[in-house]
Length: 354
Ligand code: NAI
Ligand code: MG
Image (cartoon, rainbow, N blue to C red):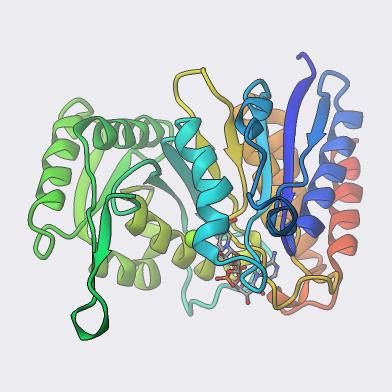
């Protein structure tokens, strides 16, 4: 394999703490596997950058990222410095949209060694495929009037293309897994976009007779994530529904600090971007106790994306072994630091590789 060129954006808060840890793990992996190597270009774009320069990234920011093999991002946002909608749209959503990262993939899997807050977790292992380019996250709309007449309108945008490619991604993924797709809808309450979503998902489903498909209203689906998550395999959802479901997925795993995610570009024109589900966690930033596993598992997804299955599997195996050994940050009820968890994962990878 040629050297993979990674654009690194640590971002804000705990992003700056967990990204270097994940890079240490990747370096250790490349030492274990002769063929695997990475080069890194690190960009200091975050809320402090905004205070200095009046924007989240320079004008040519996107073109600097464009020739990388993947973007590896920590978390963006420091509401004490910059309003969240400004920081998020200034970089994260910009990259997702401009680089046509139209699919957001977020696994939730019960890991060995972690106590799920569910009473009977029964070994769940599912992946949410979130439409990542349109839907409820739209710039169309506006505000009018003030005072008691003040009002705001935000238009949700659903296109046939957008729904089709999310559904197709979900069905293709399900084919490699347990062959079940659940579609998140709300066609009883949202009467234009959601029946359209249902119809297009059905059309895609018809091309995959071997994959079982079932639609769920989003509210019921959310409750099933708690009462019977083990029944799900791949869930396809619109932008907002997928976002909310995946925080719930992270919660039933035991902590949002372990949940990984990938923003996938499909046409080979732009890089995909890998980032954990969690944000910059201002409440624990700077204390050295952020859980690095979300970022490290995210590195594993990037390795999967590069087709480096063996290294990716080794990494997840090491993560589970470390958790089983009780080496955990406080969000999982442990006493270990960010660095101690990473060190243990690196040691375990070396042990397992021998
Ligand atoms: P958050 O995910 O940063 O924090 C939620 C809770 O989870 C906090 O109690 C935090 O301490 C905990 N947590 C998060 N990551 C953790 C880790 N690695 N280890 C241990 N505990 C962890 O979400 P919040 O508080 O809503 O947002 C904080 C900032 O992050 C905001 O500026 C928000 O806009 C931004 N954000 C950015 C995202 C991104 O870059 N993709 C995603 C979500 C939020
Ligand atoms: Mg979220």
